[in-house]
Image (tube, rainbow, N blue to C red; front, side, top):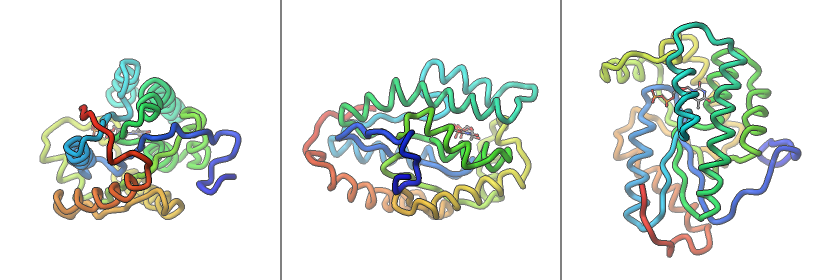
Length: 234
Ligand code: TYD
């Protein structure tokens, strides 16, 4: 096993130069807002940023997203796990790895930790197996940094209610499902403290953004040539 707990057989080489940052947490915790604020800050500093998301970061992924979030009938839990993994496999190979290879910063809404939390724990499949499935799908790629925005379900639900959008399949799950998801996210973060920044998502957005920037600045300082690269995008 490697230090991050990835079996050697599925761990593989990181493309050099880029930075892979993911945002995780339950529904309604403010991931998208924080991803956008980080994107703006990095772009203003001349970094090339690719903003993306799972599910739905590719054309194929948009079709898969529609199934997993909006299909009206049942989807067997294992089939749901495989759909998220299929989205991930295509997205990582065709979008994320090429961007990292070009030395870009990839800022992504949700990644494999969502599968471990939602399918592994929420759907009560085996979290360790779901992690392995995701790593297989993604060729072993782990983020340099994962920001976990942690919020209790009641507060998150009030934010979603205020949005006034109909709930998708996952959002519509019961409270105990979302409580399990939250607990699993926190457990993953405890297992990999080096990869995670855990923030209390009830803090003001500007305050959270500053904490994220502080951590990203440290990471950028560790990449040769990172401060000098130019060309903002996205
Ligand atoms: P998201 O795009 O964050 O939803 P929204 O745009 O409505 O905030 O995520 C969609 C849903 O998919 C979310 O409820 C979490 C779920 N999900 C999983 O269950 N497993 C996964 O692997 C991923 C990536 C998302």
